[in-house]
Amino acid sequence: MRLKLISRPKSIRQRWMFNNMTALALIVILALVSFCVAIAAYYYTSMGNGLSTRASQAASLFRNYTQNEYYQWAQNYVNSFSEQNVLELQFLTPSGQVTLSSYGLTAYTRPGTEDITIAVETMGPYVWSGRDPQTGERIMAASAPVVYNGSVVGIVRLVTSLSLVDRQIAVLFGAATLIGLLVLALTYLTNHYFLRSIVEPVARLTDAARRIAEGSYGIQIPKLNDDEIGDLTDSINDMSLKIKQSEKVQSEFISSVSHELRTPLTAINGWAETIASGELTNPEDVKKGMNIIMSEARRLTNMVEELLEFSRIEDGRFTLSVEPMDIKAELEDAVYTYKEFFRKDGIILTHTDCEEEFPPISGDPERMRQVFCNLLDNAAKHGGSGMKIDTSISREGDYAVIRIRDYGPGIPPEELPYIKSKFYKGSSKARGSGIGLAVCEEIISRHEGTLDIGNAPGGGCLVTIRLPIRT
Image (cartoon, rainbow, N blue to C red; front, side, top):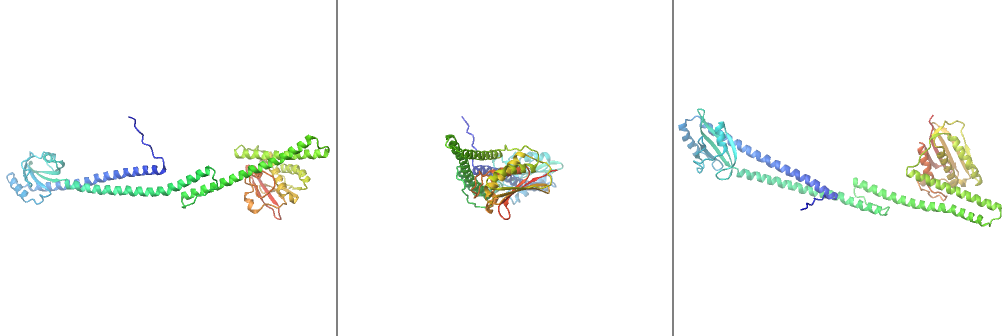
């Protein structure tokens, strides 16, 4: 025969009720048993002490009488005994035979219980409880020896039924059991209400999380209470909105990158096909087409580099090749490189240097040059309408401060908090992937510096880089 294992409850409600109610039931049972044992011990001990005391007092009354007077006084004591409705008074011989009884029915019998023999052996009172060997009734008996001249001449024995005591104990146990059941019932109802207030909101949250996992981004769950469940609801709602926003930004990013890649590729393919076909006979036109191909290819290269850098940042492969570098020289190289590019577009790029010499700064020269080039390129794309870009470097305390300013329309105030977020392009119509500033922020942060972007007084955008100088 195969035994079936008891399956454990799976739900929170079932586990809670099973564990809690099982533990409480065991506690209630243990309390009931302890209560019953304590009550029975109290009643039986009190009754036994009372019977023993009365038997001893009765036996002491006969110690002053002669053996011949003992029987007569015992007869008188039995006849005058007034509690025969609840107690049976017996006088026994040292051998254990009943000679006198207040009931009369047990006279000349031998009870045969151990309280008689032990009382004779110890010459002291002894209490016994159990079933009467003759009637089978549960009784309690207390025997005390009557001692005369150092020998036992008789035994005084008090016998009472335990039925009333047992009934009283049973009533008390029944009342305690009822109270225990009420406690269990109230605990069950309380737990049921408590679990309902937790499980139902958790079930709603689970359903909402499942819907979010299936693609229903942005859904909101009603918040019912300001407790831990309410905090969890707020967190899931916030997560849902952020996932929706992230999904939207990602979609916009893919669309934007696809457009950005398509535009230069179209120009490259178009001019390459035109030059390859031999339709252009004018060398100037051919040179113009080649310049466009190189310019668009360079722009594609920059976009791919940005995407690769961002990918390295996202998966933790982004590293720095740290070495002592001349920050002034790196900035001047970037300015020199872009000055000619900007001049062709009619943009004047100026640079203000400070006379103070900078000690070498620990950093990655290639990465810092990448930051400067990216920021200069952004200044031309977004602020080139101002036809002027200013750069400067100075020392302010323990920091090297680089500033790049354009004179364009600037950044709308509501977009400033998000301008460095990945994929964010805002309202600008300029080309770009929206990840350049995020890469610059990561590089500057790795150099333990700061990158601040804001609007300059008088118009335009001002970018400020602060890098620590360690002498």
